[in-house]
Amino acid sequence: MNEQQARENELEKIRSEATGWLAKMAQAQHRPQVEQRRPEHDAMTPAKK
Image 1 (cartoon, rainbow, N blue to C red):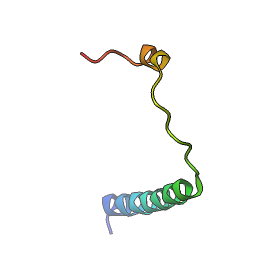
Image 2 (cartoon, rainbow, N blue to C red; image 1 turned 45 degrees about the vertical axis):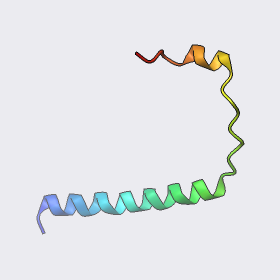
Image 3 (cartoon, rainbow, N blue to C red; image 1 turned 180 degrees about the vertical axis):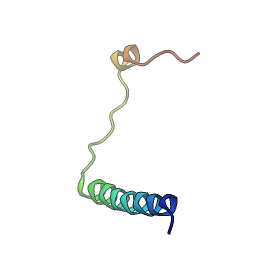
């Protein structure tokens, strides 16, 4: 097995662990209701050109 292949295998392992962790966190988290945007929020958002 060459060095490139070993690196890719390691990255794939890390990626799958991270994905699993993120999925677990997303499930555990109770997301609050998203409110309607208030005008003061628009001031913080850059204008679309």
